[in-house]
Every structure is written in structure tokens, then in C-alpha cells.
Image 1 (cartoon, one colour):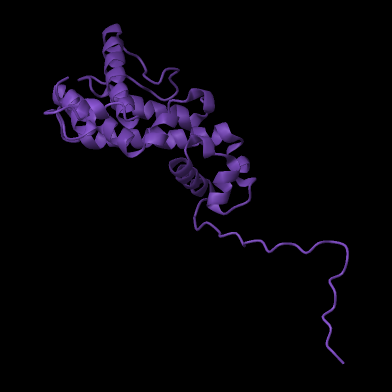
Image 2: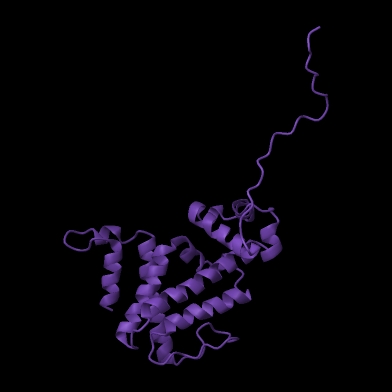
Length: 222
């Protein structure tokens, strides 16, 4: 008598095999989620940065980002805060051991460009207020840190105390004008560089090897 394979029971269709999630190795889930968010941002850009994409990258439940950060604006605000802290460190690193004055201001500007060039998508996100929870305490404090780093172009750093309503603290009118000028100058250069708007200009015969060389030259001639 032939062996007959039992027919599949009628009713529920068989479930397709689901790939087991790969757990994200981490010590802190919020930090792991932010790391995953930045990975998604670098790979897929801002359009691809969703809560589900972040959770998938981290290998956790799709509700995990919402549980820790509230909503997409909360996640993006925390990611932007991380960016501002690293921007502050980049400026500080460049300005280390440089005496106050013109050279220190140039060093700080180079640090600003260093960060933008290394983290273009994160740099863009940091200026997208409409996407961020701008009242989130961590973002407010991180912006204060990067503002203090930029304000260090002055011989006397403005008072940027915690709890100040302004990220730039108390400044004289002269300092405010100088700060706006310096910020617009270096931020504009950074944006032009990462958006590839300087390529043709830098490639003009007899000028610069790369767009970054052009930006560095502009800063050195401020």
C-alpha cells in the first residue's frame, strides 16, 4: 500500500516563514535607536527616516522608538541634539591651543565645516525646525552648546547660561551683528559645500583642487 502524504487541513493558509529579528547589541536602547536613526538617515536620507525604519534597523519592536521618544519629531530632535553636541566638539577640537583673535575665529569656522562635510544629512536636519520638537530640553541645551562654541570667536565669550531663553545668551548689539555675520558666512559656506554648489567654481582652470580647498581658502581670507 502506497504511503500517502496527508493533505493540508483546509482553513487557515500556512504562514510564510518569517525571518527572526536580529537583536541590536546595545547597552542602552535609546542610544541604540538614535544610532539606528542616523544609519537610516545616512543611507536613505530624510525621506526614509521613519519610526518603523528606525525600529527595523535596530532590530526591535516598531513601537520602541515611540515608547522612548514620543513621536517622529522627538526622535529627530534627539538626533539633531546629538549633531549639535558633535558640532560643538568639532569646533572646540579645531580651536584647541589657538589664542583668541582672528586665527581662533578661523579655526572655529574650519571646525564647523569639518562637521558639515562629514555629516551632511545630519547637518541639514539640524536646521529643519519644522520637523523637530524644538522645545525638547536636550535639543535646547545642545543648541546652546554649539552656539557657545561659535560665540567663542570673541575674545570675551557672551554669557550663555543654562535656562536662558536665547541660545546665544546676553550679547551686545555689536556682538550680535558680528555673530550673525560670522554664522551666516560659515553656515552658507557649509551648505554650498555639502549641496555640491561649489564644484564648478572650484574646478575653474588654475583655481582649486577640490571644493573643500576653495572653502578653506575663503575662511583663511576672512
